[in-house]
Image (cartoon, rainbow, N blue to C red):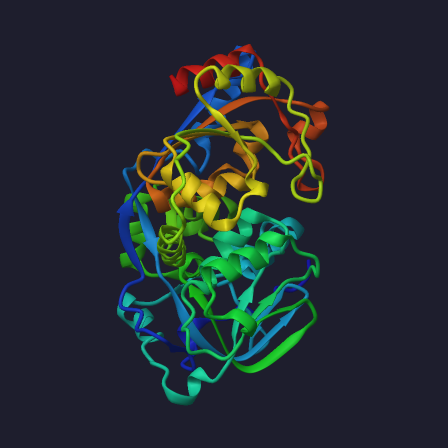
Length: 430
């Protein structure tokens, strides 16, 4: 077993400076209305979906989630290399690279993280770590955004732009750091639309960089798993029963935190997006939408979904209009979801737009057992941000049984929309 790299321990470090005091870490927030509907052709498959859901970390009927603070923090001795972010040669858990680090450790040896003790500290002392406010010359420094990649729309919205949403505007330059050089057009389009104040101060880098001091968005989400803070543990268990303080860094607890917490930066991003969309020229709303993938492989992954043509014909009769999200500008997508009452879409990155919806939005996703096992909970916080209704119809998947059980290279098999799934979707839309 390879030795575990040193993990950055904020409770032992007094060099952190923040743009605003961390006077709160967790606070209750209203939850989205999240439901699942098994709609496979065989009763046995539906029973397996129900059983998996009931024993998973995603089974939670609470009406409230926990909003987790993230704030701009000034860090010392910051390095980034091949997707790994470190402070003074220690791996930080407060970034996408922190999640990647934990996933890599878990894959190589699932028992490793069980031996990592949670530092037990009081809530007041924890907050005091972040009580050293920055001023003056501290702002003549760069802000770095740890990006997973420039190709996945969901990760770009939920991770990259939500980091940038808390950045102080006075800072010098923004560096978006990604292991991959290539990126899709939505990256520049969203940056220019929602963050025009940065304009020519945004730089993309994929090679290793080092900063004596740099700003970044510091999230408390994984720190709740890293630290044992009794007051916060009690609050988490009251709202997230599937979180286990004894196994806080294991996959089940991390998945529960991801599903039933909401990053404050995401709320800041939503507010900014809705303000920007208000300045658009008037366009009639489309209340009922069926999302259709672009036929251009450069814009969207191509999936041959069996039964989709029949679904399209059936929804047209119910007044649904077809929309290709990849052909819309950022503001058009934001307004589209904000004004819609019902959106039907296959599982995919585009459903992240439900974060821009209103409380009246009902997003109906078409997924499979693969979606439930590997992706579903990731999208919960996008629904929590808007408090919309989010229903997933789980149906059969196309492909070989082995591929369906474990998706190769992270690629999910497309759903098969059979009679049971079609009937379920039509019943839900009314």
